[in-house]
Image (cartoon, rainbow, N blue to C red; front, top):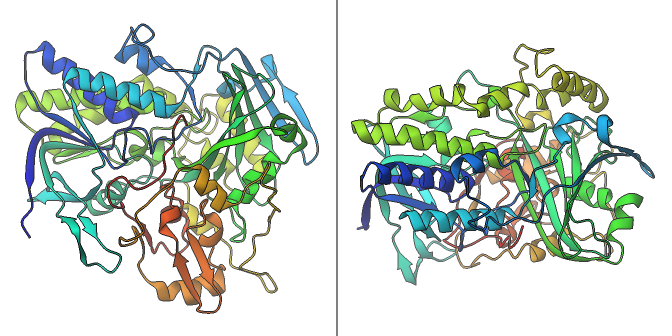
Length: 546
């Protein structure tokens, strides 16, 4: 079929903090040199920011470099951190740690509590004022290549019904060609994943490992503005599970709460969403939330792998930045500043490539050289083995992580190897019910909510008359090996009740309209036969103020 084509100089796939910071920095450098270059940022969400989810307490280092006048220009935030605390939960009580007893990675004085939704919309406005084109509602479906070189992307076809037929609204996806394409799709981006595999960008690296994070916004009776509390312990001290929670005080009696769980747990019956709700039911959490109202819910994955799991970030015609490249400090649970810095380093690389009209792998390798000399590399290198320390035992992991923090990584200075998350599952034992979570909880719709209610509070919407963007490559495995060996863990690890095991028909039903775009299924499926792809433009969650 005939497709429209658009040629640009620089193309960013994904409109998050990494790509927008990069586009702003690049456009300013070009303006200073009186050069007119076309820069386009594509975003799959209906509006910029709708698919952005983070805690978030933001380190301002990269922002100060990008825009020193950020406060004068109305940078949106929910206040400066005024008090830090860590609490260790047992089943019925908790112990507080403050001051000198607070682990250094959890000290946040001077940082800002933010909504990443508002931050990226502010960055989008800055980018557009500089002359950058930002297009929401354009999901990139495939990579265009010419003679082995990335040459742009193809947008997903629109107006296809659930049976694959053309509706009256059918329109072929546009081909957008560029001299250089920057992939900034976030964690486990659908195009980046395929590019990494095709170009072997992960050769010699550790496998990237991940966590799934749950977040809710609440209106409560107390005023905790400016207070930041992190939690460890219950309900994740058994079974090799790793993770923790946060409580961030917002203005107007609002609270950001969240819980992150490493996806390298062993028991296939474990349900991360149930663990999140068990955490909320702890007496200390309950004292905060009782009488409050849930405002919004969301979930996303985080790249935990660290420095040794970061893929090669360049090749002929492309760069990879932000969460897509693993720019996250898992010890601090912070990545916005690192994502922005990766984008700014990419801007310098792109500028030089434009100057030389050379977009080869050799030329673009200066991106890696710049990263290795940057403070972003220094920060990531200090926690290079942090997540790997927790593979196996929570308590032994706590000790090793503490030593890594105190020695800035030197105590375990060698490279700690890791295992892909989906390989940690043990098989079901005799007598275990593979269709029931081992940590089930009764939801009360006041403090705890089931996955369908969560999907509702995420604002998720997809046109149901379209092919599912979630592909099971071999359904027969689901009905046989996965059901028998693991009890189809997709029905538990998904935070939005997308995967439903039909006992009578012995198949997995996919409720793709519930999908919150977290990518957990693409990561945690034990047979790696779930392929997360982009839905029709605009579909997905609406993470307003998240």
